[in-house]
Image 1 (tube, helix red, strand yellow):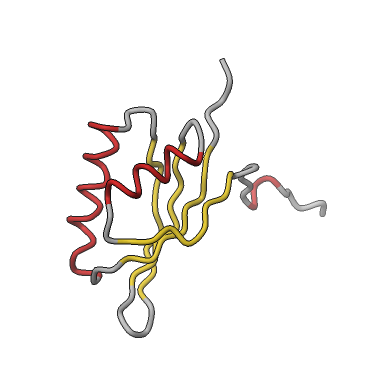
Image 2 (tube, helix red, strand yellow):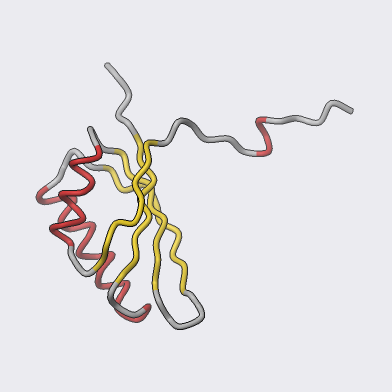
Length: 98
């Protein structure tokens, strides 16, 4: 069985930080009900100096089109960038040589 690709999705939202819990809940519901092939792993939420919200999200999905379709269904944001993730590393992957 092949491993499902993972994607980093950078979004700019049209709503304030206060609305994000509702947006997140809706995103999860849409994924579970309409896009069961998507796995939302986690998101980093950034709020800029004027209150704008951007997110950096990691999704497992069969292809980028599926991620974009989920985003279109969610609305209230634009996808700025979408990249397939080649791999992940942590400091533990680079042990000290001393």
